[in-house]
Length: 317
Image 1 (tube, rainbow, N blue to C red):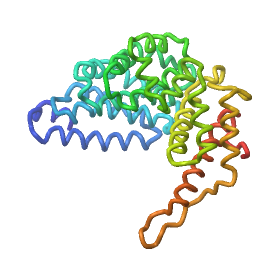
Image 2: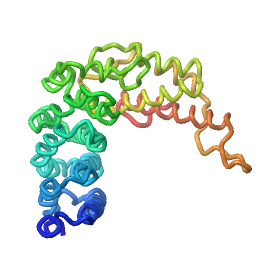
Image 3: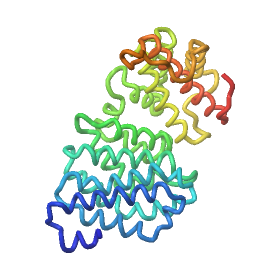
Image 4: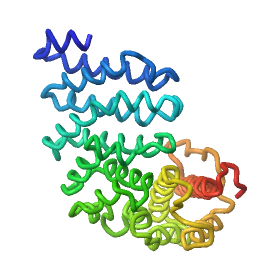
């Protein structure tokens, strides 16, 4: 069907919509099946999507969206599938990133998917994979670094770069390349109080003050803003810990980050889990119940981070 669209209906107004729906169906099929990577049609379809994406903005995003979905789901279909998935993705990533560089920064969806691809590689590629080298060779990191010099950079792109640097270590060629592009370090650091910027400082500069401040602020204040900031910080911290090699931990037991985590954990003791009852008249949670749910979520995040650092998912609170 994709070949037919490309050969006979390239200019048809409905062509992009049909191509999009075909992509949706194939993505669902591949991402739900353990045999996804062995599907012989996978390389051909990815190449066709790349070659046939026309002028329609939504259609141009399709190949990157498909790649991002496959990269993100590869862990679910097993690391054994990663070499096949990667061999299908690598040949089509380079032309897509080149095209994105030419059209940026107008294509926000494509930029978001580029970040998702980097996150997928950082989180799901098997140990020993040369993630940084692959993303440099295919032009993904070069494109990402160039995009980071623009204004209004999507969070997804910053997150992708953060996780790649976490995966490769801050003294790697990939991390050095990204950080040495003028303006990138400033964009990654973000404004004061930015959760991702705090993790970036911890990862790249070894500065833990922003992360500790976010955690201790939630422990001491417990209001909505402090809790939300701590949630964002903990979510990104956990993802970076998943990407980082055990030999190069982001923080160690007994240091400032560990102390702040334990302080927050102590302040959350007694936070109840489970679904809170809603007000029958408004079908909404009361302010007190919203706070309870928020604090219980925080408690779960702290447990995950501490458990991951101990190499177990069942560390007692």
